[in-house]
Every structure is written in C-alpha cells, then in structure tokens.
Length: 109
Length: 115
Image (cartoon, rainbow over all chains, first blue to last red; front, side):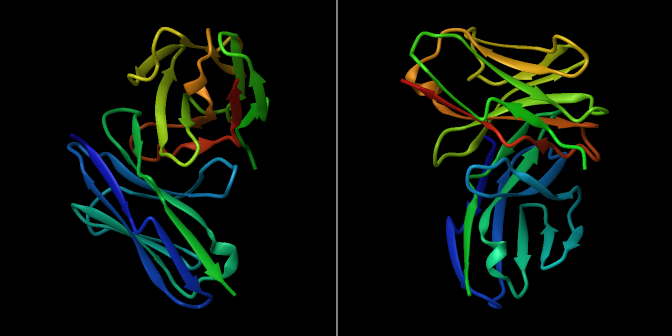
C-alpha cells in the first residue's frame, strides 16, 4: 500500500534555530514530490517540486532535498513568519496526489 | 498573480440537502481537482477533471458527488444529499500540466458544515 509519512507531527523552534522536516514515502512509480505550506484556514501554498533522487531546490530560508525513499525540508534560521503546517505530497500515475499529514511548525521569537 | 477562487467561503446546510461548491481555476490551466480536508486530518484527493471529463476519482467520490464545468471558467462540485461526515474544508485546485511542472495551485477553500 502506498504511504506518505511526515515527521515530526509538530516542531517548536526558537527563532534562528535551524532544523529539518522529513517526508518518507513508500510508493511505486513516483512522478514527483511536492512541498506545500498551509496556514490555518487556508489552502496549501506551493513551495517546491522534486523529481529525481539527488535533486535540491531552495527558496529563501527553505531547502528541499530528495532521495529514493524520503525528502527533507531544511529550514535555516527560521523566523516567526515561517510558522505554518508543511505538507508533502507525492504524485503517482497521472494527476493523483497523496498528501502526508503534515508537520506543524511553530517558531517562537 | 493569477489565483484559484472559491465560493462560498463557508456554507452551513442541513443533512440531506444538496450543496454546490464553486471554483474558478487559473485561466490557462487544463487540469482541475477537488480535495477535501476534515478538521485535523490529511488533505484527501476526491476527483480530477480534464478535457470535460473525470480522469480519476477516489473511493470517497461516490454517487452523491458530481463535478461539472458548465462554462469556460467555472468548475463545480455538487453533493447531492449531504451527510454529517461531509463536513470538511473543500479545496479546488488546478494545474497547467500533469507530470513535469504539474504543481497544483489551490484555492482558499470552502468550509462545509452539515448539521
């Protein structure tokens, strides 16, 4: 059975304290792995797409990496405005995406 | 910046009533989707739509659900006879492509409360 698992479920950081979020997957035929940010009561906001093992993407304080089994979202020197739930999603055949449960990040000033 | 818009933002209905949720996808996008998120749970795939027909649907998308693109801009989700367990946030999404570059762009969601 295809699975997408995110860890930790929740993460509390001090401002400036770098860390990583994990998304592990056991799916066959991965077409792409996507990271999204979701603020409370809002729709997911696209961050990154990764397609092949070894690929990396960066945007401001965020960097996403991909291996054959998992993806990491590294957050460098986070700020309070980075507080949100971070979702990963895997794209399987055609246009079907499976989302993980998310990591709720809270960055304290 | 182009965006996906959804209406209504919140709808309260009685069990057994019909509900229509509306979406205007990004204008040059070709693929359209409905997802739902029950409070505190995962974002779940419901249905994808391409070239005026359903291309894929999940086991959640049973006979009480239907989708339609009645004109060149709107994309609707109809729930024929709502149940308590249909209470959730419903997200519309669109994408330009599938596969490479096929990231989804989501609307802000329609919160459905079934009493």
